[in-house]
Image 1 (spheres, one colour):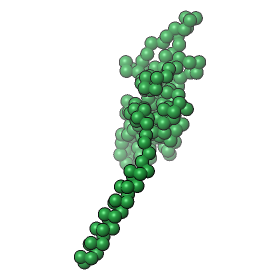
Image 2 (tube, one colour; image 1 turned 180 degrees about the vertical axis):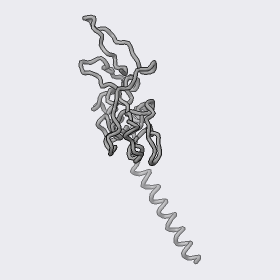
Image 3 (spheres, one colour; image 1 turned 180 degrees about the horizontal axis):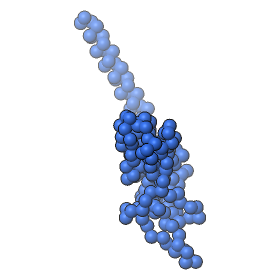
Image 4 (cartoon, one colour; image 1 turned 135 degrees about the vertical axis):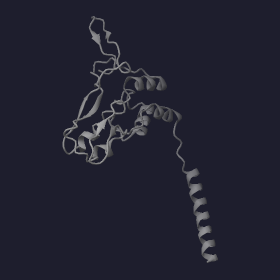
Length: 186
């Protein structure tokens, strides 16, 4: 019994030292700007930007291969913060039409309470329980479309986010006098 405990302790100590040495030797240093950019991003890893997660999007922004306006859930505020960090210009008034922020809406008369949407939501914006009607907290919803894809009864749709004082911006007139949307929600 004593020899078994001693051999397991020696094995654990030896493997722990080996893993500790390997961790120090093969450590990959992440640039500080990537950490700073990752802190600004929402961290929901929804994939709307085309990257696998917020960390890979932060790495792409840091090396200049992705624009600072790539995060739809973050919107205008995140784009401005990222532009400040990277020292680039956030072109929010370009010729491209900005996507309107969307939020999920559940038609409660069609909801069966299967919890598939509840499990797929990256921000926990869906409230409900098994065999109960679900609803969406619109302030937490990022409009990632994950819940719409898995709903078996098609009870979930994406709608435009309603304007509030927190997400409304003035339209800026261009040189011809016609208003140009600055990037706020509609």
